[in-house]
Length: 586
Image 1: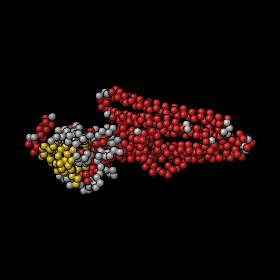
Image 2: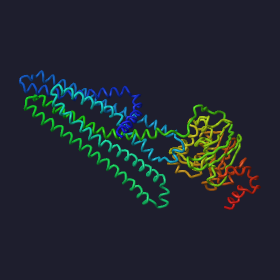
Image 3: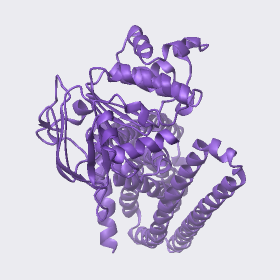
Image 4: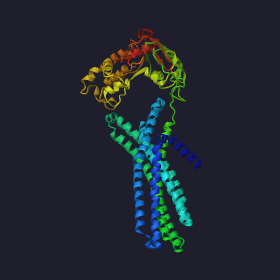
């Protein structure tokens, strides 16, 4: 069990060490400064020993020249120590912050690569905790880790060697007290690591809960559920408090044991040293030097104790970091994937089947479908028939379980994800606008868009008129998730974004179903302009919006049950006809 945990810690450290590579010069300088501060600290007991020894032998031996030499030596050492400490506290910390920044970059970059299937069950609040709190702890660990281990090693080894030259028996007795301290520390270390891990998990849960409650604040208030949300938060907050209280109890025992060990070591040196002094096996100067070295050693051990807490926080952070980094994205480029250019927009489904995971039934089963260049195809049918799933397979938000999807005769698995998705535009029912200005949200469709291009996209989307009437025009702040705009306004901005992207393939996923009649009419006009000349797949809830589609497909659990234009399907008197009559009656 111990060996397993040691291997686990070693593996975690091994995954973390490459982040030092860019900063190895800074790290070497930091360790050199650490060595200088340690040397400065170890010299003082030797100076005091020299003076005390001469005083015990003959006070007349302590000359003014000797005092001035010792004073000058210690002054120079203190200046060196001050400069070295400044470097460690500033440049060393900046190195840690840079490593944190690099890790945060890698973490966020990895999150961008993870597939929809991961986010289907992930808690955003927990991820936020990992990318902020956990990585901050790693910063402190990255800076202080090598430093503290290096300083402690030098102090213990050098102290042992120096003291052995003075009195071997007393040195061995003094250092024999260190292993029991290490055993005690190890015992509490294991419990602290477990506690910190639980603490990190709970703060992630709490963050997720707060995010969920605040983002849904309008629902909370409309249902008068403030008290319910407060109670839910208080329960989570209390659980977090209990976890932290347990950790602090362990920490209290940890520090108390260290102070007890500290006192015991002083007692050993004072008592045993006094007997040696009485037996004239040690001089007064050596006795004083031992007491000063004990102080130096205990300061070093206390720093190790303090660092142990930091180490456990850092290791917990690294562990949680590597947990996410180890998750492989379900959807990624194949080795031979190539960019697709000059896309015409022909789409083919060949015997496609799909399910959302082991044990789930097929949402789509053995489906074959050809969509011609520039064709406007509408998908209708009952909920659960696989309409949205079918459209999610084209840009590879999910991979098919069986069969293949082709664009212009090329298997989408052989196309790079970036170029595939750059050629597909999506307008969904649930519009997401980023916190920022209207201009920034429209320009999301094309990063290097000019002002004129942004305005033209907005005009084509039917958004320019209402944007111009806003006090700040295109610089108007949309609020969190576009909350300051109406549903129709948000939808037209999302359409402008796609106009700017100018993709040859367009997916409209119930883009007007959540709008009122007036907004629907305006948005529908924008969508018709957007769809012109593009291969368009429309998922429709309001059947009047797809009457002019080139082809309408009725998709159910059994697959495509009907296909044809509006007139043909109405004349058949089948599923579509019944759905249309039902919708018209409503």
